[in-house]
Image (cartoon, rainbow, N blue to C red; front, side, top):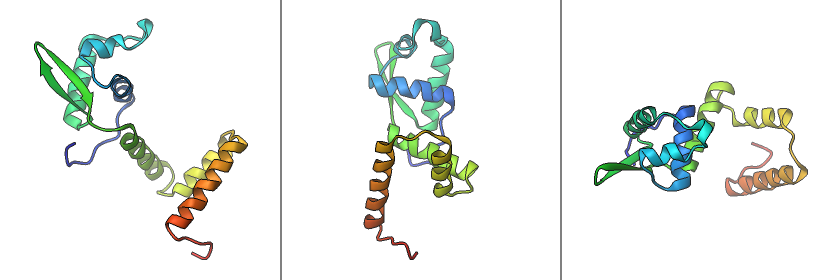
Length: 134
């Protein structure tokens, strides 16, 4: 991957990244055909978007005969982190706690999910040696 800061992908770029993550690699035609028939994007639009995504560092291509085969250059985890960082910065004044509070107040969370969050926070405290006095 290139040593430059990646932007957060647009919604259209995310749709194509999801396809490439699922398939591993694909031609333009493969990306187009991976969408349900009624939701298939235009071939030329997809081709243009893939080239833009390549300049942004999201994907790379390799020539195989007369076609280009595209594959993701970034992982889902990297993109998820970028999106969360941007959301926290833009909407929650840089506070991850404010995001979590908002999620808890606005989302229906199952007891098992809440238990998992609590366990994760305990582990995080241990790992980072945080206590209630900080």
